[in-house]
Length: 369
Image (cartoon, rainbow, N blue to C red; front, side, top):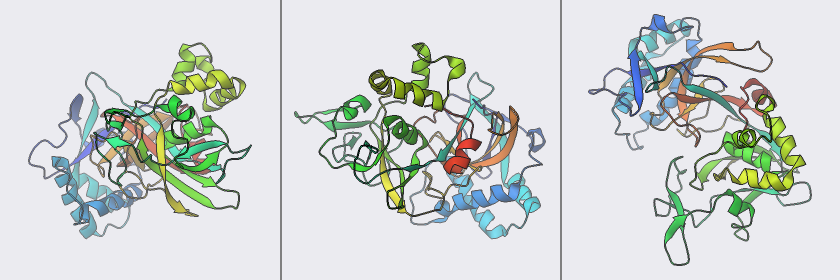
């Protein structure tokens, strides 16, 4: 498990404190206090930040009322006008337009940093003996705050429900109910995978490319959820003494579920949260879109709690157990908030986007479901 000891960067120009967040402690620091700041590749960070500026500069989009949005808007206008060339100019831009503030939950000195990637898996358009587990699109009866949602993806902490036979809003079907057939007959299945644990793992990542029988790559992205909080089934397995803590890994969970199919269903049901997907592309090799609406940059984009404004830069100081590297590899890097997720909760909580495919899966610190 990696820890975030980062410094949030806030833009100058806001008329009130732009980082006044609940349950959050802030400590202004100097650039020299950031370990690894001078050694970072600021040019790559600037390119990532510039990508996040596009929504700010789109006059057709509604403005975020939070004060930091205005600060970021001013910084984006200067970034576009600056014509930055090279790492030295990029570093100067950040130092002149932002100031670092260490951010943590009240009473804590560190945060939590994890990683995610876009898996590439095999699947089928139709169910068969090999591919028999569905990924679902958003159900038509799903309500958000008691109303029909728009086409926009549902926020990760929205109140989700449905109407019962008495026309009363009740909680939506949980994972176990859906596994038992609550959505059958509605033609919500986008495609079919090999097993339920693979499907659950993809829900955690939030996007996937499914390689169909004819070689077509169907890209799926997060669209909605069924309204429940995320529960780690890895933690459940440890608490029930079904897998030892020192043996815990994604592969170990998968092997246990294959060996215990009946009990595995009940364990999966302890995580009531289920994610619904939408098709976002065909045979598309570009990086996926984050929740901000811009394409993610491997190793530079992070998912954050949506209390933060998308486009905010964060400098991350951490030690990561990266595969094929020495233990506790130092990670000092300027990142940009461009995504969110149902498990990303807290002021100093971040999830690094590592890229797509097996190579990205091997790079990230392991995060068992």
